Length: 70
Image (cartoon, rainbow, N blue to C red; front, side, top):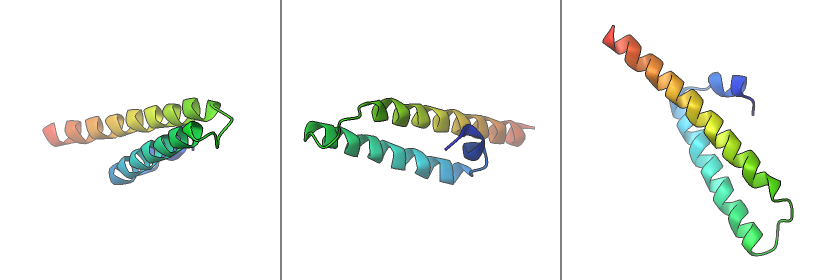
């Protein structure tokens, strides 16, 4: 999912997306431990997507807080 796609999601949807990505990361770690996965580059990809989602979420929350203050 690209950053532009993430920006279109609501705050609640972003929070759900982050939870889902963290679950996927955990499941991938279990798969690696049981030798079911060979491509370890998936960890970097999932972590990058989590970071992007967190960044977009922070931007949205800051924007909402700024609007409330004004």
